Length: 140
View 1 (cartoon, rainbow, N blue to C red):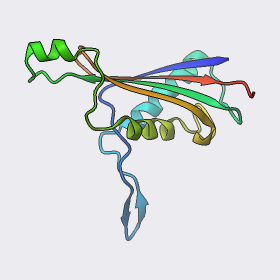
View 2: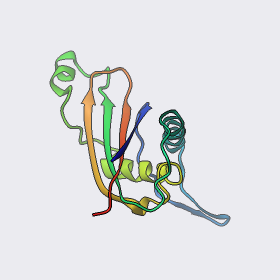
View 3: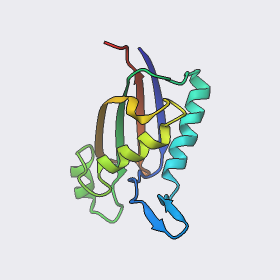
């Protein structure tokens, strides 16, 4: 099995709804989260010598670390540190954004993702982050 780890600093963003205009359809990415995921994926691929998975199955493990707001009380921050976060954006929309951003860099098409695990938790760090672990699976 071949494994690649990608760390993306900053707050995670979900995939936005497509917008239709008279000039065509586009999906907005105002914070540039998909671009950040793509940039860090390209860096990880170049650093670790990852080869594009052309046809085989792929597993994604996505861990989203959300920043605890500093406006919350110290007691509340201590209670929530390390617990699951159920706030927006939801994990499904973040996973969709990540899957699309990794396409043509880590794997050829996001249809190759056959196993997906996404978790979203509060962290006591000063900035959010996303850790993506890509595993190229062997065909059964």
